[in-house]
Length: 218
Image 1 (cartoon, rainbow, N blue to C red):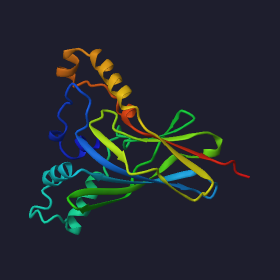
Image 2 (image 1 turned 90 degrees about the vertical axis):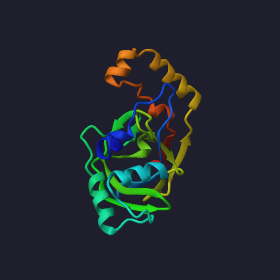
Image 3 (image 1 turned 90 degrees about the horizontal axis):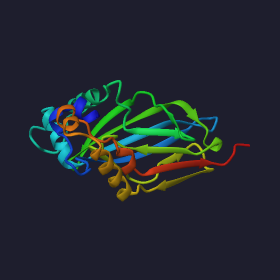
Image 4 (image 1 turned 135 degrees about the vertical axis):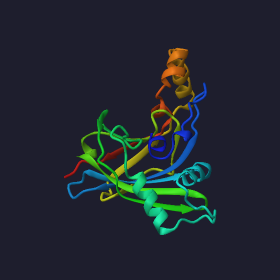
């Protein structure tokens, strides 16, 4: 998880027996179409909850006067730190085309802001392969596989570059997700949990799914 790797391991204590997140991140997405009508890039905006924001800033020794503002130097330093993602961190954002995963490139133009006690991170990423939505259903989900963090979509993604596309958001079945978590947890031994820190990776089951479809290009 980005939070554990880049900020502090102290924020990432093991989950309790019931699945519930410890961080809450309001998430906004903007999908950009290229000249060929393909989804080519995505803008991402994360807004952490106020408690996590406080811990993140305190860990970095920022906003020591607690005036609710970051200096330009502090914002730049935090942006530089949060730009360095480990190789195995996928950014908690997942695209699929007809069920097949599509990768995303590294974050670009990372910027940090701090408003009303909440830390804000914005950036954009290019898709590894631009997607043509009229060739099939494109799905997008924002989630932490471990469900330590919960990404709450601020609304359907905005689409820029085409006016003939539809976005539908399928809400997650939280009861079914909890049952899946309980089932997978019951299959782990106490040794798995105590010695290896293993927990079910069910974040995707708790996440809403965005479906993007477009009219066939003429």
